[in-house]
View 1 (tube, rainbow, N blue to C red):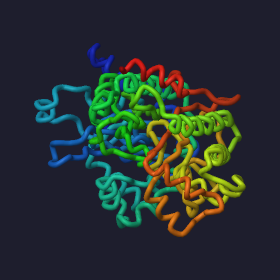
View 2: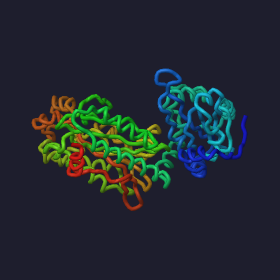
View 3: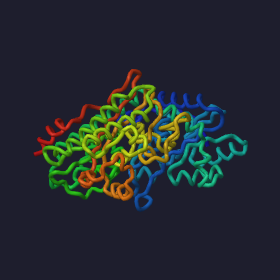
View 4: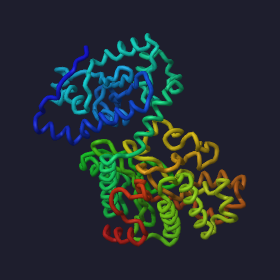
Length: 486
């Protein structure tokens, strides 16, 4: 059964809570209108996320709504699907109101009808009505556009209602719908930029806290616990599992059992997600001791120079691929000064020899996801029809963003140097790129680990703007903070 409703008056406390969790209904209505105007005919289908159980049905992980659903509807609760019927000029949310059991266990909450009204959605139907609506559309040979699904339960449901085998869903996902969503979500609005500033600023405060409090003898997990506590206390969550490690050469290290020891480096890659779902993503590397060793400082300064060179290039119409390559050449030149690389550096980077030390990309898009819209595909988010991703060269195949930058893009800059013994052994066994890599000197760096620095940036009409607040970058600034920990 479908019904139309007027917005009801909410209790004052709940009205404030709802305001804190959503933008205005006009924002969501305008987003949907813009999307509808950019696509043709048929039905645009939005799959919300379900609860994900840890070990049994009613013991679930923290719920996180699908980001595209959040962007266009703003309702952060499970068991919802929505569609925009382009031919009938109608937007419908499919879902069910709380049952008495829900109220007993969870307490009275704002009704789904009220949430839809806050999103500017006029029509609400029961969850089982979706299959009926789509079956009728299919019988009429109408086109149903859907985005690439990434959760198992949504894959199953889509396969059932659209009569498409699960293993063919990705190929049947709508390219036109995907491109339209990417184009719209890529350009951040004023209210989104405010959220992203907040996420980056809180993340910077947490990083400063970690730099001020880390001491020899602590477990990595002690610092991770402090990061998690601060993120939740801010009113949000972690945007992704914290990477807090003394083994910085492991790019995404979530093992937290190492004990901090004098002479080591700590790499902290962590960020906060605001209550509205916008992410911060910062990295700092600092010494467990009061000061960097001479060797650590030399390598850190190379990474910092690559960061600064990359940041300086950020501007509309610049390809991020060129920002990445500039960072790679800066890293390689610094390594040549240390005696770890040699030969013609331009040739070395072109052939990928620098990937011995820098195996990943210099940055990625950010927004409602820490790797923004990664579920929609890098071919559309980080690249486009005029710039295809290099998926064969080690290093370049991990660059998530290469395309030309535009005002309104939000992205990271995060160069690093990583000394991975397994990679040294593999390449060294065949003297791979021996004309560019000095393997004899490299052996002394087997236990060096890794260094990364990272901040978040908005591309403006005239250049760029760092999001959040200033956080210590230079070795001198970091050492001044580390002195406070002792």
